[in-house]
Length: 349
Image (tube, rainbow, N blue to C red):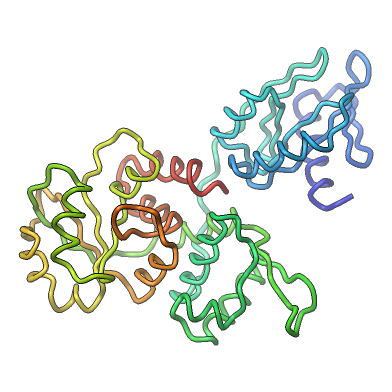
């Protein structure tokens, strides 16, 4: 019995005992049995963090492996709203470690919603370089790539020293977010991203707590995408800027909201030495009221990570993981809507 199977079985049994404390519940191997009007055999299937991408993988294993005489139940840390809708469409039961359960098995019908998510924990102790390494690894996970690249490759991509990359991986290992696979040393030694959802939570909490160096500007903009591609792209140096915020969200996972303000990262040296010239070249002027554009000073890692993400947008833009962090940091009163929407639709864990 694998650890994930045991975890799923224990979580399902716990949810059932809390929901129907007078009804016997037993666990044997990968089956949980609820004694109510006969034995109701339940097969828990682990779905990790409970986001749609995790649930889709769990559903595939249900199609392949679950006994036709048992009721499959998707189990996760916390089943997200989007995943609940997906499971409802498929008619599949679910439970989570937060205490929620939606189960239909023979004559049994149990529906208990998950309680609200607890407040975010204190920010993890990332260094700037370590956070950049974590961001890059998380961005790779959005494409399904969970293997951690070799240290030298990682350092070159993220633009950190080999020592900084190695220290970052040691920290990720210590938190259980990455796990060694195979030999600990030698050419076949490797790491896997074992807790990508937990790492994303920790990284985003740390990132959202950081301060910005931002200048507000006014500009005449009818259509944000056209203005970026027709005006900014022609006036600003190539590879010195990238789009984030609501414009990038609107391009990838539209919410039907106005993409304003427009958030643009600008390379640190250009921000420090040429900002007013670049603003004038695009018809912008500084302002503290009626801000239409926010120009954000990019640190040394931001633009290399954006290029490594290679987001398929009509303009240079950050990857989905950085966009998630930016929406949490600068999303204003609707940040709690924007960021989870992106996570459900694009990141998937």
